[in-house]
Image 1 (cartoon, helix red, strand yellow):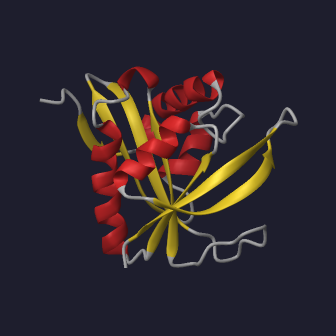
Image 2 (cartoon, rainbow, N blue to C red):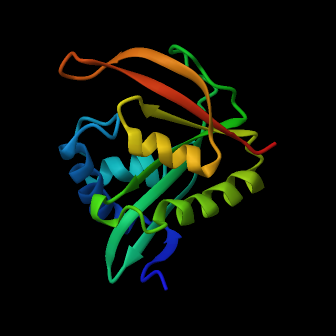
Length: 170
């Protein structure tokens, strides 16, 4: 028995989701995010973004242990390295003390099924090159490397490469 359950994220979960993500941000080194979120930012960025497909969370005894969000790639993105409009982008966050219990894999099972049903052709996961745990997690799910963004600047001026991984659905 897992002791936790997976369900859709709701706007009312945003405060607890922000607390989880902010703790990960404060630890550093595993997320591209450097600025803490409030509940409003979590709703706008993960729970109900304009191009959102789904946001799923794992919860045990009222505590959110992790969440995963999927959204369509922005067809109007004018920045560097745009992705095809029929691709989606995934973001995953699991509390450090809850990692290694299958939470990320359970979230991915829901996300993958939802992506397939929505007609997503491929899912992108772009991970900091110094995030060995994140790179290993996505590789274990079947994502494969397809690119690298070189020297992406962090807020403090340091530069960190990003590894682009993809999971093909179509």
